[in-house]
Length: 84
Image (tube, rainbow, N blue to C red):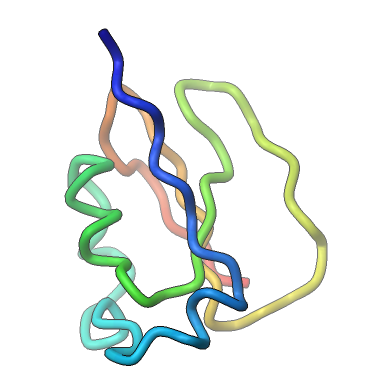
């Protein structure tokens, strides 16, 4: 049985995180190649969303937020990361 996909943190959740965004200490490219589960753990306290999973694109807003990461996932691994 598949586990439900993790829920990305929204801006409100991330701003309330006491530890901040640990992933800001690394380049975004450090997420590429990680499993989705590992990437989610790395993004704890960060603003992020899934933009694409296994070829299925998800709706996103067009507002630009420099801190927000949008992830592409294929076969359970992060294949790309975009800011904004």
